[in-house]
Image (cartoon, rainbow, N blue to C red; front, side):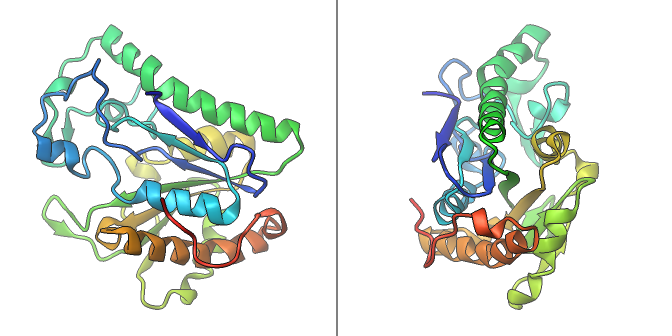
Amino acid sequence: MQAVELINPQGQGAAVILCEHASNRFPDDFGDLGLAEADRQSHAAWDPGARAVALGLSQALDAPLVASTVSRLVYDCNRPPHAASAMPSQSEKISVPGNRDLDDASRQARVDRVYLPFRDAVYRLLDARAEAGQPSLLITIHSFTPVYNDRPRAVEIGILHDEDAGLADAMLDQAHRLPHRRVERNEPYGPQDGVTHSLKEYGITRGLPNVMIEIRNDLLTNAADEAQMTDEMLTLLRPALDALGAGGSSGAKTGRAQNA
């Protein structure tokens, strides 16, 4: 199995969607990193519900989707190779024995096996769209836990950005359309937490509008939840794309997005 999946690469919408933490798969050549089964199924290993929402947005907006197929505990594709958090030995309260004391060769093997295929897939996709004169903007999809280190999180939807806040601002301007949700800027994480690597690597360096969406994962417990949150993200995204002049090429389809 490849370390990255590319869905709808010929999508004609303006959005390009990334899901760096889509999977909790542990390839055989890296083993289970010494983790218990419960830990391999936990949020430490992936972002539950994120791939379903990303896929729903891909279908609704006719957008290409690039998703990792490997657990972020093997390699976190939203971190650069030099970051300690790219292969963390501790994730909240979960210790990761297989990530302790990795030597340079072991780290490079994971970069080569997981990160570079993901990065190169995004590069090729964005290059091809640029060469075809097709405008692009970048959306990355994540989920987060309602409790972190014993502290409850009230925020339900986080709209994250780094130095380029244009798309985030346009989405936050639409937050009134979801009066039942607590929508916040750069929560529960922000640039200071090192979570904006993909925004910088693929969006800011190319001058592309970009945003990172975080959804609290107790709102993503089943397929119905995932479909509802896809619709709610579209409620923010569609007028935001219009405001940035990308709505006409967003490929947006009418009706509820269908999640696989």
